[in-house]
Length: 366
Image (cartoon, rainbow, N blue to C red; front, side):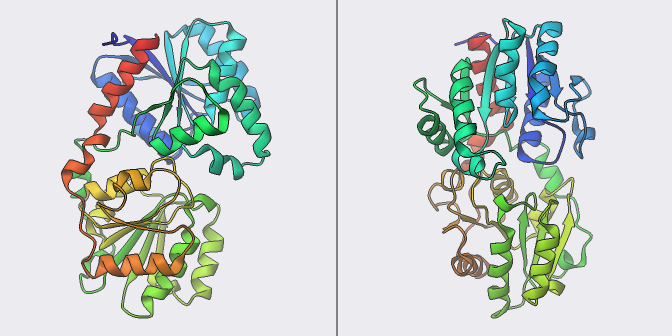
């Protein structure tokens, strides 16, 4: 067994409300709770999760507004702090590996791929071949590559032709505060009226999450029964989604409150949770919903949902971008034909367990 590192650095983009930010903050909190000195290094120290930063962590703001200036900014940090090991997640992986080369630093670099590389590349402003060429050049420089799901691991290996093994470590989602957060009351009247079921979605309002298909599915559900739809999250697609809700005639039955700091309380009171994504890395919101005891319906997108739901054992899987199948899955859940997942299904995603796995890996390369 590897020795535990006494000091680690965690590097990612900002403190926005996405999955990377939540998971890296969770790791920071777990590491600090286990006595590991932890630096948080950010491209920009801004975002809605600013108050969630553990007070014991040292925070370094690189003030890098563009990815192009990230390698030089991080190289300065590496020369200044000389951390034994740095864990990067998401788009900053390439920056971390380039920065170490520029700094000529002895720091070991572990990168965590959080998304399906093929799908997320296709949504980038840069052509796939440029991103793949760059990733294929720098990723082999990492001391260890971690993927958040088996699907992501296979995609990274195949896309980049990595000869070294990619280790799978799930996200640290389930923690001791989750039950307390789930028990908080929801003030909105829709959650106080048990006669009309509430369908819940959550995530950034972006193309990846495909809430457009969820709206179309909900419109089909509304043709046969009373129901309401709540979508938690904020993003660039809000005007399009609001316009679509009006066009579908469901505007008065859809509520999009924006970013919420505690989505668990909404999940606990919902009738069914729906993930409608075109792609994912893992799908943290599915795990959160399962922990809240709500039935879940998800697209069988690459990668993650099928692993979380054990190929449909713990929820309903439906095809991507298919509003009819998604509507059928929602109706099945509302009719009681989709059971909530057992607590044993969540052990893989416990924060303490995942933190130990990360510390083992970080310690083995430091």
